[in-house]
Length: 75
Image (cartoon, rainbow, N blue to C red):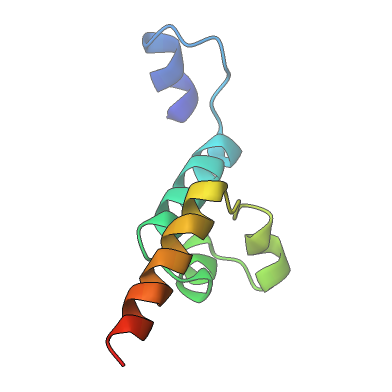
């Protein structure tokens, strides 16, 4: 289905389930999802398999530290 959609859109990149997972996983984590829930959603029995799809970037780290700082400020 992804491959057909990519062809219809004229994309040069061949879409497959790995591309979908590579896109979904970081966005899920970026929007507050947990790795444990992601593991279940992707159907992985080992967390190490799930971690292959989790890519922490600079923005995610900065936002996490800012959220922690904001929480500490309320103590």
